[in-house]
Image (cartoon, rainbow, N blue to C red; front, top):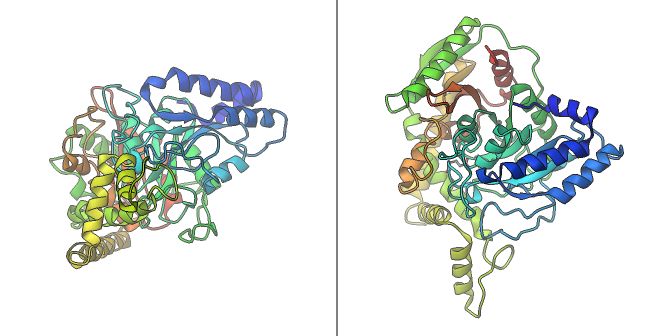
Amino acid sequence: MTTISDIQKKIKSSSARAVVENALRLARDNEDYHALLNLTEERALKRADEVDEGKITGKLAGVPFVVKDNFLAFGAPTTAASKMLEKFDAPLQATAVEKLEAEGAICIGKANLDAFAHGGSTENSAFGPTKNAFDKTRVAGGSSGGSAAITALDVVPFALGSDTGGSIREPASFNGVVGVKPTYGMISRYGVVAMASSTDVIGTFTTNIADAEMILQIISGRDDRDMTTLPDFFEIQSDVKPGLRIGLVNDFMTKDVDPEVLARVNEYVEKLRASGHTVEAVDLPMAEYSLAIYYIIVPAELSSNLARYDGIRYGHRAEGVMTLAELYGRTRDEGFVTENKRRIMIGSYVLSSGFFDAYYLQAQKARTLLINEFNELFKKYDMLIGPVAPTSAFKLGENTADPIKMYMCDIMTVATSLAGLPAISVPAGNSESGLPIGVQLMGPYRSDASLLALARSMENK
Ligand code: GLN
């Protein structure tokens, strides 16, 4: 697959314009995957010419990329894959996009997602699903399915996504690319449509680890416009520490997991051992409750965040003469997909005065117990390993009728989200039928650089 440095060589030997035109052509050739909702063609070509004229310079001058369509970016609407924002033109750009542009990178399009990032297959997009890069009858994963597929299809060497409970890691695993969910607060979320404020992070899709490190170095760091960002701490680590102690999470290696997924994880574990690291099975008993905790806290937060789409302030507004209550109701009925509505209802329910203590407060307490378990494990282990998802990419439509079945796919990704910990999905081979399978490496708070250094040392082994 194409790396950033392959693209940089092409820019040198031809031009930024030629490279960007080629990326746009590839995007069109691959239209039937439905990975992109809109191209930002005019702005992209203008910027490419400015690179060729020497007006735009930087570490990524002329390198094309794609952002998930919940990032505010110029050149096309920011839809969050919803009718609510179908025609919404961003008044500003997300900090991450601004930082990439400051290094000369060129956004060529906006990637498909589950509407408002609610989902794990991109089938909840109001504009139709994205297809898996390896098998058009299967899902790309989600919610950042478009960003994952477009990277895997080699249209661009990298893409940005967001991960609230697995939305970078799962599609990365399903499409055979590297997906990084950084420590909570490492990268500014300013200008990204909010889902759940206490777990939302943004991160990268790349074809290799070094490219992920380069992009993270550029986009991470304190941002005064996002008060949840941490002071800069991400520094690329040139070598992996020898003899790491790694815990293989038993609770994710169960009989419910596809044997081919277990086999790929076990092979990766053997390679870690052969490279001088120790790997031992460990227990994370609260993992069993992590989905229940997640599907209370996240709907609670997103129901609050989505309250702003009222037909008055932004986006879609129902037409006709009606009362204010009808305007809210109709606008929200027309603007949200079924899954958005389901979550808004669950969220409002668990926050309502009669049920707050029984659900929301209880879930927050359980979340603390989960965090404590991680803290205990990280006293003895440098990192943890396990699968990303119980299966490889499933068939389009396979889980859509049963929301609980769909939620079960998140069982291995939500725990680290609830704890704010960094976790990455790295390609670990294929199923017999040729579908990619990823393994998940998880680390303590702010251990992003060491996780990536380990993953880089294992690449191609
Ligand atoms: N699949 C998870 C969910 O539906 C994760 C979503 C996300 O990370 N945005 O909530």
